[in-house]
Image (tube, rainbow, N blue to C red; front, side):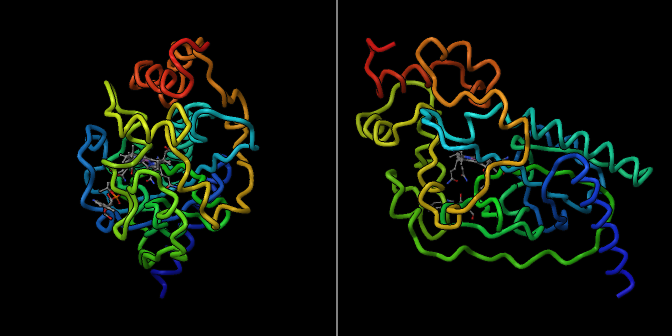
Length: 278
Ligand code: B12
C-alpha cells in the first residue's frame, strides 16, 4: 500500500512535469511489459537497467480544411515537434529525479507505442490497430521516455474499442482484421512505397485520394466524432494541407513525409491528377 502511494506520488510529479512541457496526457507502464522491442538503432539509447516507460500523447487534429495529404502529415513534422517536447520533458524529469536516466523516443523507437500506451492507461486499441484516447480519439501521436526509475504501479489491462467494425468495413485495402492492421496491405504504406505500383495498387491509391498516408480508418471511427482540435500550438502553425506539383520537392525537406524523397509523392500526384497537371 505504502509502495503504491509512493508510486502514485511519483506519477503525479511526472504528469505535472509533462503538463508544464505542454504534453496533455501521459501514463506509465513497466518496461518489461513493453517487450519484445522493435529492432532499431535507437535501442542503443535505452537506459541499461530500464524499468519504466512513460508514454505521452500529442494530439494533432487541426480544423477541417481541404487536404490532399493525410492529417498527420499536414502539420509540421511531428518527429521534431513531439521530439522537442519530449526532450524538454526528459530534462525536467532529470531535474526532479537527480541521478536517474531518462531517454526519449518518438516513432523510430524500439517501443511498440500503441501497445505501451494501452498498458499506460492512455486508451484502448481500435480494430484499426490505433490507440484511441478517451478525449482526442486516434488523432494522437505517441512518444515515450524510458527510465531506470521504478514507478511500481500495475500496467492497465489492455482493452479493445467498441468493436463496431466501421473501420474494417471502410478500409479500401482490406488491411484490417481481428488482429488489427496488416501493415503490408495498409493503404498508408502503399502511398509511401517507392517505385512503380501494380494496377491494383494504383487503383487503391486513387480510391484513397491522398498523396501521402491514409486516414480512412480514423475518419469513420465513431470514437473520433467529438475529438477536439489539438491544444499543441505548433501543430496549428505552418500547416500545409494541400500540395501542388511545385510543392513536392520543397515540401519534403521539412515534413514527416521527407524520408522517402519526392518520388512517391510525384508518382501519386500523377495518379490522382494526371501527368500534365500543375
Ligand atoms: C511501421 C509503422 C507503420 C506501418 C505499419 C503499421 C503496422 N502496425 O504494422 C504503416 C506505414 C502502415 C503505418 C501506418 C500508419 N501509422 Co504508423 N507506425 C509504425 C511504427 C513506426 C511501428 C509499428 C510497428 O511496427 N509495430 C509492431 C507491430 C508488430 O505491432 P502491432 O501493430 O501492434 O502489430 C499487430 C499487427 O501488425 C497485427 N498483425 C500482424 N500480422 C497481421 C496480419 C493480418 C492479416 C492482420 C489483420 C493483422 C496482423 O498483429 C500484431 C500484434 O497485435 C509506429 C511507431 C512505433 N514505434 O510503434 C507508428 C504508429 C503506430 N503509426 C502511427 C500513425 C499515426 C499511423 C497512420 C495513422 C498514419 C497515416 N495517417 O497514414 C497509419 C495508420 C495505419 C493503421 N491503421 O495502423 C502512430 C499511431 C498513433 C495512434 N493513435 O495509435 C504511431 C504510434 C506513430 C507515432 N509515433 O505516433 N504505420
